[in-house]
Amino acid sequence: MRRLRAALLLILLWPRALMPQSYEDIMDRLAGAEIGDLADVLQQMIVEPVEINQLSPDSVAGIWFLTAAQKERLAELLRRKAPRITYHDLMDILALPPEAIRVMFHAEPDRRPQRHFWSRLQWRRQAAGAQHSTRVRFQLGAYTMGSVTEKDAGEPRWLDFISGFVQWQSPEPRVQLLFGDFTLQCATGLAFSGAYGNPALSLPEHALRFAEPKIAPYASVLENTAFRGAAFRWQRGAFLLIGFYSAALRDASLDSTGRVISRPPHGYHRTSREQAAARTLRETTAGWIVRLSPAPTFQLGIAGYDQHFDRYIVNPDRIRRQFAFAGQHKRLFDAFFRWQSRSGALTLFGEMATMADDRAAIAGLQYGGPRHRFVVAAWQAQPAFQNDHGALPGERTGDTSNQTGAYLGLTLRSRSGRWSSYVHRVRTLWRTFFLPMPVQHGDLALLWERRVARGFWLQWRLRFRTQQVMSPRVRLPQQARGEVLIESRQASLRMRLRIKLARRLLYRFGVDALNQKRPAEPNRIGYAQYHALHASFGRWLDLRLKWTDFLADDYDSRVYQFDAFFPNWVQPVALYSEGQRWLVTFRIRAGRRAHIAGYWLHEKRDASGRKREFGFQLQWQQ
Image 1 (cartoon, one colour):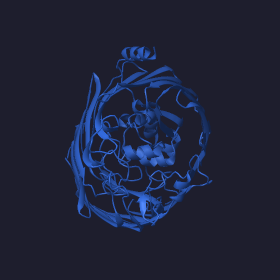
Image 2 (cartoon, one colour):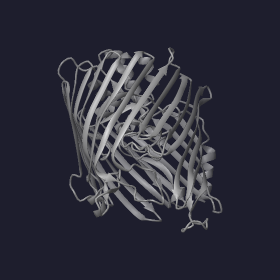
Image 3 (tube, helix red, strand yellow):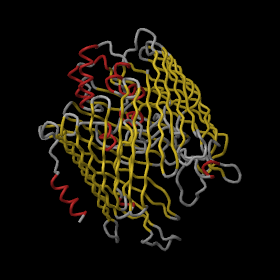
Image 4 (tube, one colour):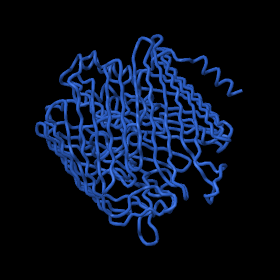
């Protein structure tokens, strides 16, 4: 009966409308992402901030990462105050934290010395225990200071992770000095990908980006990503130089001889084994980036670093060979370029890096205008190339070895709506006991959007995915356990509906359906739907109610949805088994300085019973 109801809903809600972008819409397109903070997600999607004082009020409509209400307020601010808009003005009208504003926009600083203090306390109670984090940022003129503390659920320490930085920047963006925790970004991210890796390979608008070299203060709870030390950035005319030194402690599991056999990236320290691995490996790195722009449409550069570890790193698995680095020393050299046509419609870019005798390279092309965009790119990384601070397209920071991939994407805008399609293929080689096997996966997706009427939007996406997985049911005589790779095929359909019921009342509806097929096995089905109401009571209170109903045959047929627990924090949720979720969130604005937010979650699954969770967040600025 529930499957019949799901099919009827999909037929009734055939696509007819254009859905505007919002933070939750962005997260919907990053299925599988594990980063939930607003600034962290925007770091993936926005390579260069928008020059706010060079915009006209009419051009605000093209800023894809703002909601309709935020665009209206921003256009009014431009009419009133441009070209003297400051970061404080943007914080007031957009109601976003400072770190997100600085990722989105570049504004002129106040002529008088700036004094700004911002802090956020977040606390959650989960089944595994309490989780909390704090973020503090203080700015006084050219100086900026910040800190982050965090404890995951189930960890015994009150403060498991502490991070901080001090930064000085000249009034003209010519000199920048930074001490503490920081990250670097450069070109396509092969050498330095920043704190949060490359953008997820999804729609052509956000699939591949070429980033200007820069240093960024670290403000995340991810524990094993940032550099820790000192860095500087100096620019004069077309010449830019970045240098840095870092001495950081990383998590690492050791064998009986003291050699490193595993380096977990997550930073959880709950079990005795995870606690023993905490910060046992010292990583010392020194590096540089040089970029030259001989013309406004052309730039080229080189980068490199020298990295040492105080323990020897080995790969303990000699049968299932995951090609990885072994030793105590790494040296990387990188070269990159970008060329853009005078009209700005065509862009060519590339990057190549070497480490020992192995290489990795990325090359791409972007072509487009206001009504269309075409993107094509290809990349390859040899087995022994493994960079802890870079990323291949669509991968997390540190995932750079043994992969060949390609991406092709196209977006068209017309009266019938916006059509987007992409193809993404990846191939890698690893070993399953005695046989070397290529592992391949690929996506083919089609998305269509169109607006029907005022206050009524709908989005539709169809995706086909093929991937190779282990199957214990198929046996090979050469293999002791009889494991072999088989091809899994998956088709998924996603729809999103938004209706403005009243001036301050919004209704959202979503459906996700999935069908997975493996050889000699029955089809696996996954389905989920949600209904959500968002009510605003003036500018002082927001209230959201969300109910989700889901059904999946097993974990392999799970469906992903995204729950906004706090206004700036969204988490992907894997829905499997059969069950329901109830989520209530609120946000109270106590004037311009204080925001209080909270949530309550109740979930019931046939496989794992009931789960209750709640939390609150306090944000203050002055």
